[in-house]
Image (tube, rainbow, N blue to C red; front, top):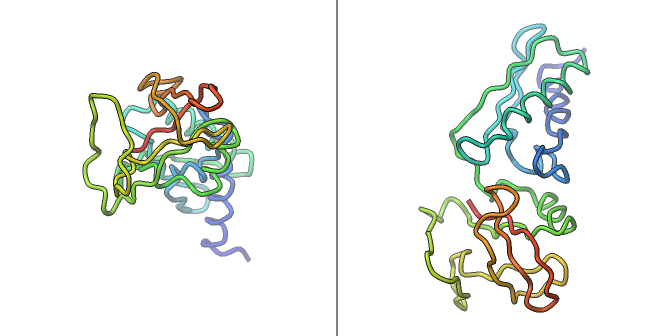
Length: 181
């Protein structure tokens, strides 16, 4: 007999394996947006999903993909709930997810350590690196192609609102940087 906990773990593994619609190199588990899976009765499963930001257009596609995967594994009723608390943070991206972003040519976000970060600072002028600063926005963004810390911001927005466009000053290659949230 399969226990509810074992079934929830298996269903979470399945739901978590769904690729992110905007960054298909990452699964929802690696992105850190899948919060929980609960078995509710004999034929209903509830999935808790947190968007990367309020109004994220990908949340609907994520929900449909989760429903499709769980239906394919015999779950009759799937309810996907959007959960806003705690808010998603780029710190929720797993180490495996950060590695995959780098390999895909996207600089992963710098770690903020949400519990000590406080409000997200906004800089209106050019960004500069401050030696020995505890703030991730002061740490250099490393090029995912050559590893250089000598990079420049080209645009605060890239192919999605979650990413900025940067260029490496060493290898001259442009790349996306997953912004810290």
